[in-house]
Image 1 (tube, rainbow, N blue to C red):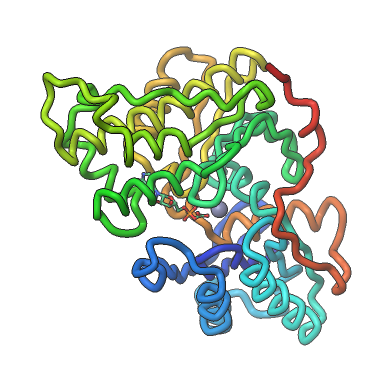
Image 2: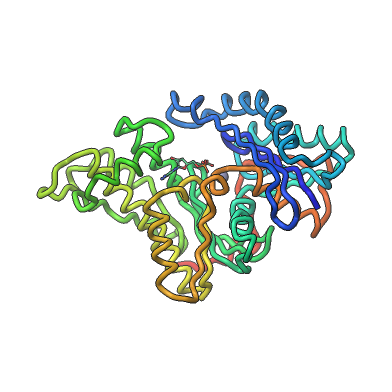
Length: 348
Ligand code: KG4
Ligand code: ZN
């Protein structure tokens, strides 16, 4: 089976053609980050308009590069949740129109499940077996889940305030490093010493779950209360601030992940989302993989970690095979789905 995938949930317009055995025949991503840079973040209204302009050329290019004739496409898959409503509506409306014009069925997928599925595409030669734990970290989401089947995620924990990437972007704006902030802080941190500041480890509070995270306290500590956490034997440089922030931001993720591995006994781990490109997180995960021969860690290449349509097409192929297509009256949803088991996560 061959599927055309479309992704437009945030600020990337992407299309891809992927087969059900995970071969990526084409992948085109048009990023809007330059457009949003002047606002230090994604402006929803601006994002929707850019999707409207980009979607047709991006889909055409993906179809052309895949060298698949249109009648070789079995389904069109599109992200319809969660994300920015206006952005989602552009991709979903386009996919519906394409489906109506071609008679090729439509299948909608969840963006978080698609991020989790990217690990299956990345491990195609030796597919990562289910269940696996997956850390999904970007500018819009921070989630630790157990991936049980292509469309089934058991959410273990999420951020209770800011997303991890959002904290990177805000600290970057404070340090005047531009947008997106993650890559800039990552680069600057390489020449800093994290011991210069001991930023606090936020406790999400008694009502939060065992695996929940919080980033707003860390952001506030960096921007407004640095002096309080400064170790005076080190100079107060931007490099040192970046290194100390990054050290704390990533160690929070690794702590929750290790906790979930111990609790569930699942030794398989995957990552997704823009922050999965972070050099410290990747180093920590590579180190984790070496700790025990039973551990297996899949770090998809950055293109498959960022928002992309290959993960949507790949998951769409599995979804279509399992449950067929969706009705053309299907809508969009901005909210994260209530995945099965999400209410069952262990509580503190
Ligand atoms: O997945 P993505 O492209 O878009 C969504 O937010 O859905 O992720 C973008 C986020 C931004 O917040 C960016 O600052 C962060 O990922 N990011 C990084 C790195 N590269 C991108 N954060 C930390 N370190 C990086 N190397
Ligand atoms: Zn995403």
